[in-house]
Length: 324
Ligand SMILES: Cc1cc2nc3c(=O)[nH]c(=O)nc-3n(C[C@H](O)[C@H](O)[C@H](O)COP(=O)(O)O)c2cc1C
Image 1 (cartoon, rainbow, N blue to C red):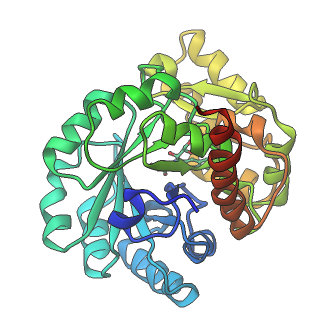
Image 2 (cartoon, protein in one colour):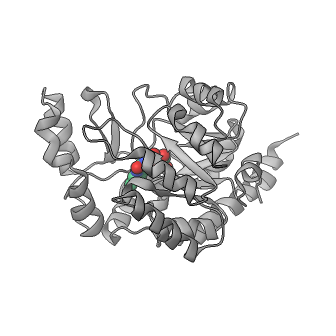
Image 3 (spheres, rainbow, N blue to C red):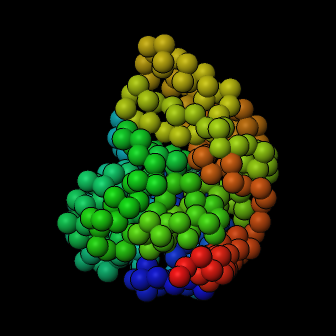
């Protein structure tokens, strides 16, 4: 099995991470990822209050005795959630690792470090990775332009972003964005990363708490079936292409303001109509280019063992056969 220093630092068997996912990163998925020997993150803000997060962590612990973490995503917001309270729950609950995303983690680092919580910081550029390393985080998750969610505004795909980051980052680093199979893991290792982070691929698993129609859509969709919304607002998000996301792109490209799309992009609309009720044209849902590589909906255990075992096979047979 492929083992890297990422496994040693973060206490997992496989160098495979399930990144935070709003509405999807619940105990069902995260415990399955932990039980498969990979590193899963509950998504703090999926829980309506910090107290609910404490309960979700406890619920996840009932489903696994393996380590798992919590994702804390901080994005610009008119009415920001009580981030410091979520942070304190993470520390007090004794979770061993936090995935920070969407912001410079400086403000929260002393509390995490004082509480013995390792910090895996997710960012989308080499400069932010270097900055986070200087601040003292324990690992970097570098998200390329292929990714679902927020790819940033630089548009650098993994083939360049990962080795460019690896040249500057000395702490353990996982590569993210577009990964879904053993070939991706081996490629990430070759590019200088210590493992991979996946979002979209984990949504198309049996345990992900989303409607079957969404999982089936990911199997049916190709690598061309995403849209980049909010580009003119410089807050780009990669989401599945559907009638709603295409309408959002068209309104904003035509000079519209956020107010003009507010209803269309409402998080609760995507959550209820798409993820719960299964209307894949009902609202916005995040998905990456890797949809083009998704052909089935396995259990998490099957997926992780397929990637870990496949990587081993690829390195020891196909690539070893090419050397010398
Ligand atoms: C449905 C969904 C929701 C997501 N929500 C978040 C989030 O709340 N916070 C975050 O940091 N990343 C979020 N992401 C991004 C993932 O954690 C991960 O970085 C990304 O999916 C990697 O790219 P991939 O989809 O190509 O694997 C989300 C991704 C998906 C698919």
